[in-house]
Length: 226
Image (cartoon, rainbow, N blue to C red; front, side, top):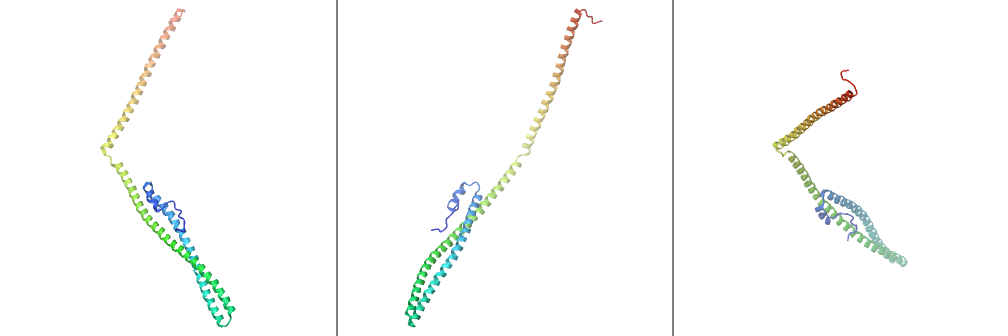
């Protein structure tokens, strides 16, 4: 069982599925590589802590073993000297050292197993990282090839038209401009004719009114010759 909790949003198990629907697969892979790299860093830190702790436990275990053997030798020396009380004290200390040796050995074995598990996890994470990094380089190369292909297609499309087609559109454009100019010229001519005709009608109206005024004055005794 893993002794560190996976916190990545993307794992190798789901990466391939998400790549199929990803608009930017390189960006998705970069996210995976970043999170995996962070996990590797955390795992390496934990490994260093466990390794240091493991060495400390091993030293405590070996020290207790040495203490046990030392007290046993002291007990034998005391018995040879006829000092049974000292031998008993040495044996009590031997038992205490033996208990410590058992306890530290168990802790060391458990810690050592965790260190081995961490080594396996680090190998797995580094292998995952390298495998996905290689895929990232491949997909990045494909995306670059696609981008260059699109640029080539765009440039080809811009220059793929025949000259006759371009000149035909230019001819149509010039014709439109000529029609527009002719329409404006005709409109101005019509405006001039309209003003002239309007002026003539106004002049006629003025002359009629002038004649009417003359007749009215003549009735009142006015003579145009006076």
